Length: 217
Image 1 (cartoon, one colour):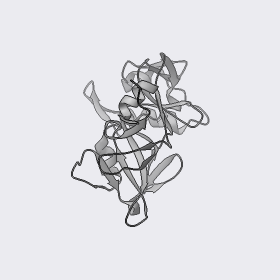
Image 2: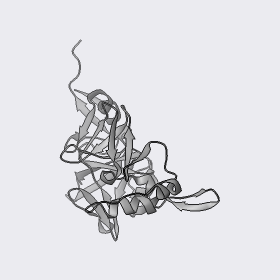
Image 3: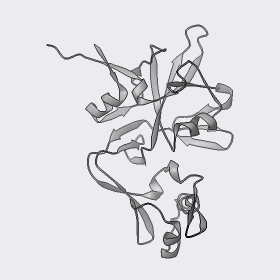
Image 4: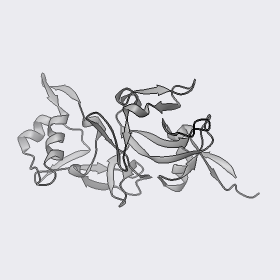
């Protein structure tokens, strides 16, 4: 058996799913609970009351269990809810997905200046997501004011995201694309050897290892 970094394993296999056993520099037996997409890793650290569990502060971040609650497909602290996805994969072809189906971390709480005014990306995105059940028709005026990046297009009142081949996407249990990778964090759980308690950590793909059968020479 040989150890492969999860980012290398993802590149080779094209997909990773929760439930696989991995290890880190400090913990030998971890199970992948799911994958989280965020604007940047510090959002997760500051947003969920976390603390470093080792001297490699950028490698593994321990989670304060009293400050965060875990459910099958999301984690919650106070009023903050963050989706947890069971699968990440490398997109095999160019595709288009309706924005109402997507979780886009970079559009949450983002404000920027356009033509001298302050525009909230979150406003239009929130409207689209909030009216998901009944639909929300985006007007040309709203679209022009929003100034979204070129990967997004407006068609017949709906906004679509262009997803390129090779991009990392996060999928739900049905295999549907629900987010496009920005800064992906791996959520793992393990049993503490001394206390027997169930604990969770955040880590990066490149800091986790999965054992695979070695190639015979």
